[in-house]
Length: 84
Image (tube, rainbow, N blue to C red; front, side, top):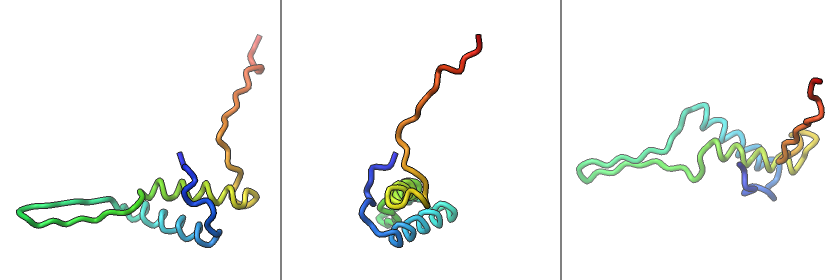
């Protein structure tokens, strides 16, 4: 669940983050660390693409709910539609 890390950024910044997250997801980029015989190779991203996308979408929904949908955190269940 998103924690609101990107709240306060502009819409253009959020859309750029969203595009970057989607490109990482579709490219299949992963965090890799490898070491052997004193040689070390590593690639690390600051935030996993799935989390980056979730954070960006949360901030976009809060920034402009009419375009990106409302931010919903509560699920409501209706129990009065039972059969007799």
